[in-house]
Image (cartoon, rainbow, N blue to C red; front, side, top):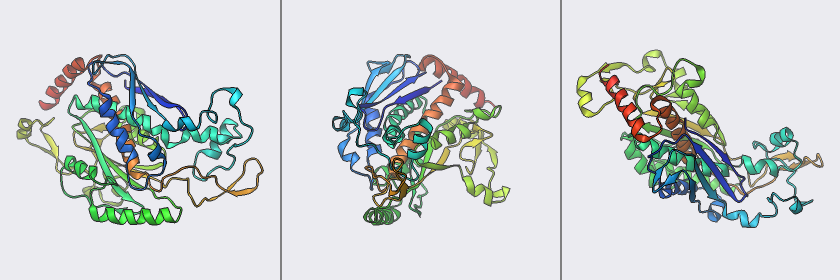
Length: 393
């Protein structure tokens, strides 16, 4: 089982993750993780925090000479801004400050509910951990999961499908080509005309002190049929992926395949017809069965069906506005404009990178559940045996 925990605050010294269950023999280098960390910091509409931080990872355990050992892997992403917060975020009681408490919660954030739940009179005790800064180390964990999946020919990518109600039209090309097009875009978008409209809207919103959300699409290529299970609710792959995506800050909706559009169509335009062609096996296909459409998004009955897994996640606008919404001061109980923390106008491109990460983590977990072993070599034997089984079905 691939599992992990993260720790750290937005303005603390570092973000930390410990990964357990990563098999021995997985090829892993910090440079590969750093590439995804850099992607997370890119994107038109990002705020000043990205000018302060240049995220890189330190691998502190579980890897020797470029390969995992089978023991827990520790990842650290340091916060460069910590030098300005050492007393404000100090663990030492001697550094307690009587003034400077944040008492004006932001609408749409975890501030008020978290303060009520944990009994804090300083909202900073909530916003530091609930901040999307935490996703930096989850992106690092996701890059590790991607490295494991690549050992078995499984790749994860995606693009931004919508910003502020402006939808991109995706060219009819293989997903790998679309990923390449998106990589050349400041918004990770595959539609140049739509991207220009998105940028104009972002500029307008920034000038108006407002924020924008959007929709990201993630695809997973090379997944064999049979990950997940129909036998219990918590083993269904689509449910697990939906939970992973919904765990990302600001994500408010998830679709698999055609998603909500399936509710608006007759069954004849929803379900993917099945065909069989023995010639596909010679092309390296997992099975002789195939579908000419993929409206199910690669998952049927809670299990991967061998097609490309296609997921969409809807991100709400960031709740920190430079034109603050109305709130109530928790100390005086007087109406106030909400506190303003450093923020982005649009963080949808960053959300794509985070979405890729959590999807990769859950696919890696399901892959190990199905083919698990203590080393990549052992898993490969299990996997090849299963491929022979399904190819002969």
